[in-house]
Image (cartoon, rainbow, N blue to C red; front, side, top):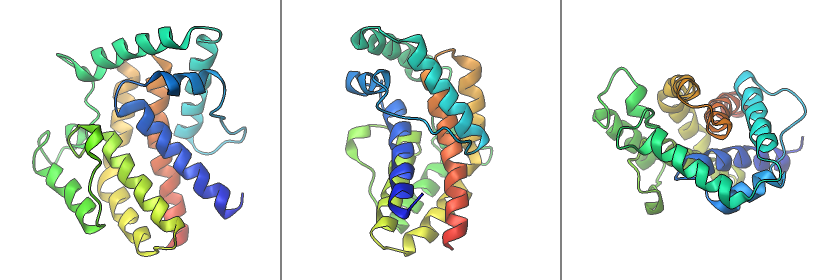
Length: 208
């Protein structure tokens, strides 16, 4: 795989996680999934990515031939019950899973410090606290795009962000969501998030 293809793959993985979790998945995204426009690799990558791709294929197979609007409506109901509430079972926030901080406590400032050090401000459209999985992956996307543009210093920012943030909580989040829902798209999103962090860990190790 050449360098351009690697960057494309990295960004596609990150974008998938953002699409699944930043809000209820929208109909255009569901249509692309059901049309097979998001392809999964035939080769093994790592444990979590492989399991995530399998769950994604399960989602597509289960909903083959169905009206995307109907599928989108069902996903919205499950997303809301699972992650919004009024009493959500899963909170896709770093500080919810870390043992060294309270939920939306001082750990949130640590996340925001990583953003600030890299000169990045979270997009306003997400409407979530800055330790939400979609916001953290939006930051990861920004770093990858800047690496592609030749800003080598962003590799160091990513190394720190992986070690101090993404790699500290995503496995727990993934185990939790898999225990709380049978919806394969959300299980796929969580597994792909964890697998992407592991994939990025390997790439950054090679770049430094």
